[in-house]
Amino acid sequence: MDSYFRIKLEEVRKFYPDWYFNVINTDKDHVHLHMIIPPKYCVSKVVDTMKTNTSRALQIKFSHFLNQVYWDKGGIWSKGFFVSTVGINEEIIRRYIEMQGQEDAGQAELEL
Image: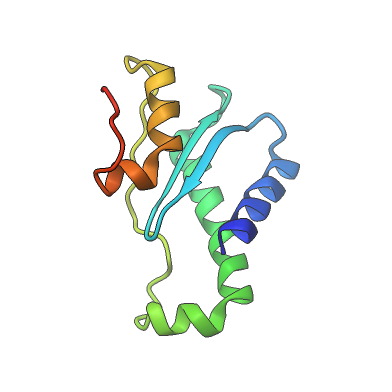
């Protein structure tokens, strides 16, 4: 699913070519993205657009698996998200995303 998810994110860029994904990393139950969007876009609209398009595509392609995992038909994305626009060192964010699985499992040493 990870590869297909990345393909679908890139397809979103066909309609929004000024959105840039610097780093994409997935783990068992969540996704981290380091991206750049122009200030003309509302962050919540960007997140909603990505969630809507990737969710629809993943549900079509992997319905047999997702129906077993998400039995309540509530969707594969949670309602929330975290965004940081200023004040955090960009390199620290990038390293965190790249080391996401190891960091969450307590295997990486990352200085925040």
